[in-house]
Image (cartoon, rainbow, N blue to C red; front, side):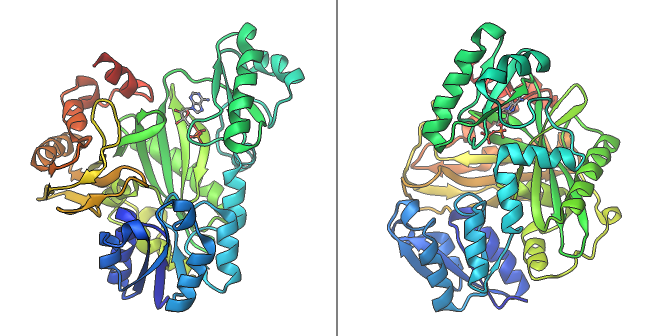
Length: 445
Ligand code: ADP
């Protein structure tokens, strides 16, 4: 097993990786920018290295500094967490070229899935259902015929897209060319690439994603789904596992399709295959080749430690599990607690004066915050994840409600009041929502 792992990340996810390493007897190296010198992930790790000034491009994205930090600390492997360099194929190649292990899939798989047109082609070839649409990039001259065949409304998407940018809806043929031109301009300025493709626009789908876990020996398992339909500006706000929309045979069916596809691909490590789900049909949208923010809800219902498994398989171990060993027990929900105004969502950086987290049976808080912590303005506004497990969805909701009431954060505004409001909503209580539901709820005021 690795002797020492360097964690190329910060905040709660860096702490999550330290915890898994500790339980495995692996030493840890934290890295930090000058803005994070007092951060909890730095204090928790065995060693730490300052890798640069506050802006992420000079520190957490600074590849030479990260490699140098491995060299001076004798770390054997790098865990990238999520965000930052976690889906950077070039980084994975550089890590490997320095005789270090990248805890994640191969650079080739990261690259394939990072290109949306390529990812969709690959998924389709592996037997994963995809959104009906153009077969790859679309030229202006061919667009009207392609869109007519798909059927309106259509969605124009940027091949290099991310974060919902470069995406435009065309409701009818008379606005198609105008929307394509808007999408191209947005994509050009955001990604330096104006390649677009066209898809059928689904009106009120759910976002349902399948977690996979694979080793280097041809074993590929699915760990069920997460329902991440509660989103604001394409950002997930609350996630639940299992999905209120699926039964166990639907779960096994899509899970097996995805696990078989990953086996054929030779995928290694953890990954998530994301779908839109409408009228009983799954439509692939993208694959994330990393650990996700919402991974704990899968851990709560399967009892598996996904970070431990990631580290084991990166070191060449066999999973030692079969699909039949994976049981889905109870229900779990995660709330992303952000330091933001719960109505305007404006970031609320500042110093946390009081920090009291809920506890008790089935309650988990993954966070790097503490009383006295000054939230730096340079990074994202996630200050903690409240994860609650119950024997069924009803118990989980009651537990979540009382946990939100116990959570005290003073000094900065948080999204906790938003979750408290959500708990009162019959649609949410009934699990009856889709990807636009939250924005509709918020616009009602
Ligand atoms: P990005 O990488 O830019 O986030 P995705 O392909 O993951 O783009 O899509 C982001 C979000 O856009 C989805 O979660 C969904 O809300 C919406 N979306 C994507 N494709 C479609 C589609 N064909 N129909 C309707 N909504 C879509």
